[in-house]
Structure formats: structure tokens, C-alpha cells
Image 1 (cartoon, rainbow, N blue to C red):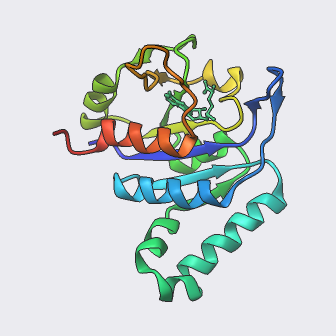
Image 2: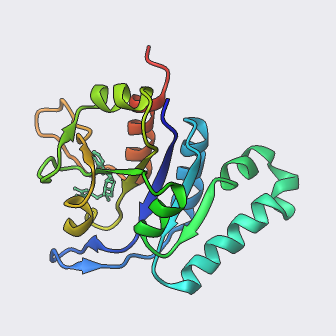
Length: 187
Ligand code: SAM
């Protein structure tokens, strides 16, 4: 099986008016996605943000849970937060994870220019030998086109069978669902 990591991208992402923006890091995204990443066997969880102070907050949070009082209080949470790596750019995450790592992007829409992998295809590819995979998830209104268009592949959106699907999953929910489909135990 190929090793894989998760990246939560805060810049560049799409703003409400379609322009590229930078979003704020939220603690719940750091914790919840670290727990999903740890559950499904990710090697690392990159929190991508261009501002040093924001990355410093993440480093401080990680230190508390991995070396500080949090580690004494909650070993399981400590183990998840140990996967967290704050980095300024997605490219830095990729070069840290492996210069040959492939970026697979995600979105609620299947409108990207990259090859679209169904969840089964993504699962099958991950199970084979090959370069590591970095799953990139966005914030705001999704990953910027510059990221979407330069990725190795896009994983197909999670879709609802509801008659008028409301497709506005939180990124935390999207990560958990996709990692379960691609790296979870199939039932
Ligand atoms: N409208 C945005 C889009 O199309 O990506 C939704 C942004 S959502 C708040 C943040 C991130 O969660 C997305 O960038 C994507 O990584 C993930 N996400 C949200 N809904 C998803 C879905 N239905 N399928 C796959 N990923 C999804």
C-alpha cells in the first residue's frame, strides 16, 4: 500500500466572490482531522498556512498534546496530534512528504481539469505500489484553481442520493468519509 498524508489548505482557497483568499485555522479542524488521519493510517497531517504566527499557534497546540499536559491527560488524542505538521505552503508539504509524492485534490464539485478518480479507483491505486499520495482538502469555498489544476488527480466528490442534494459538507466530514472509502475496511 502506498503511504499517504492529508493536507488542510488555508491558502490559496476560493473566497465567496471566487477570488483567492487565506482562511483562518480552526482548532476543531486540527483536532478532528488529526483523529481521522490517525484512524485511517495517514503518515502525516499537514496544516498549510502562509502566516508564521498561525503556524506557531498550531505548533504550540501540538506541543501541548504531544509533550505537555495534554499528553498525560489523553494518550489517544496525543497520538493523533503527533501527526500534525504546520507548513507554509502545499508545495512544502509535498516536498517534506516525498519529492515524488502525488497530490490528489478533492472538491464538492467534479469540475476540475485533472483525471477524476472514483472512490474505488482511488482505493485500488492506493493499495498498489507507487509514490506516496498527499490528499489535499480545502477550506473556504474550496481549493484554488492553481492547486486543482496542478494536481496529479482529483478524487471524485462525495455525492448524496437525496433528490435535491445539499452538498455543503464540512471539511472535517469530507475527510472522514473519503478516508473511510479509500483507506477504511470495506464492508
Ligand atoms: N464548495 C467547496 C468545494 O467545492 O470544494 C466546498 C468547500 S468545503 C467547506 C472544504 C473542503 O471540503 C473542500 O475543499 C473539499 O476538500 C472538501 N469537501 C467538501 N465537500 C466535499 C464533497 N462533497 N466531496 C469531496 N470533498 C468535499
